[in-house]
Amino acid sequence: MPKRTDIVYADDGMDEHKLDLYMPNADTDKGAGPFPTVVFVHGGGWAGGDKADINNEEIQMNQLRDVLLEHGYAIASVNYRLMPNGTFPEPMQDVAAAVRYLKKNAGQYGLDAQRFAMLGDSAGGHLATMVGMTPDNKELQGTIGVTDTDTKVDAIVDYYALYDLTKRTEDQQNGPCQRAKPGAESSHGQLIGADPDTPDGEKVAAKASPITYVNANTPPVLMFHGTQDCTTPLPQAQRFEAALKAAGVPNELTVVDGAEHAAPAFFESQENKDQLIRFLDTHVKD
Image (cartoon, rainbow, N blue to C red; front, top):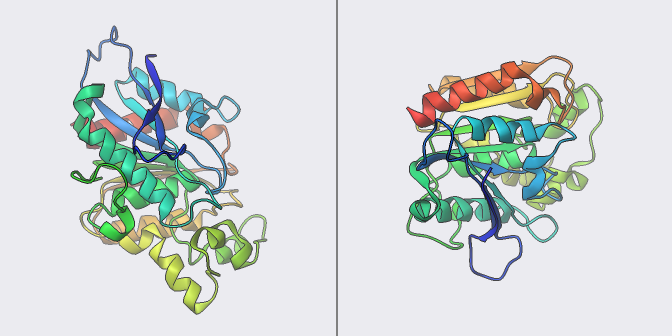
């Protein structure tokens, strides 16, 4: 597993503006590249986590890493500003800058700039989806680093992500744990710097919600979500699925019965691995 760490994707001195690149073994039947690329965005409530989380053995995320590499996908794992240093839209602008850098310098790294996918878990899934869905929104995408390319991707993959910040408190109150932090104190409230459960805050929450941007040009989306998720309750994914279907966007939602947030079952299940590769092969490789 060839690996390059701490690649600077925006030369502005910020420690967060680095990524790690994992490449398939050149001696596999996948050849020497250029390889389709999966940009991984780690979770952590927008306040924690690290690009090294792609190697996490506790929740079996290392199995996700391995299955992607085995099937000929390069992985770029991205760091971004965390709260309180980064609030919306800054974290997604960091991720967008990483995507632009990778596409601009694809030849240098053996990547195929025409075959990119976003992938993230939890808060990282939210950021990955926002970046992948809004390539033409200059305000959200920002102007960090490389600016003469875009963040258009061929597919988006999410594990237990948030899609509608305006409904999260309600979903948590009605969810398996039936509890939620007050809006302004919640992680998504801190992210947007407002109380999402007030009329003014709801407008900001909507601006930071992937569901707001669904349209016919949205890339195909694959979602994995658990029935016992108290952090990002299942209705988040179900409403997003309905919006994607209404817009005619190819999508798949796999509901893992009994799975809590960040359960190992998401990554160790062979069925889930097979679905992931089928989805990427269909929408990214072909």
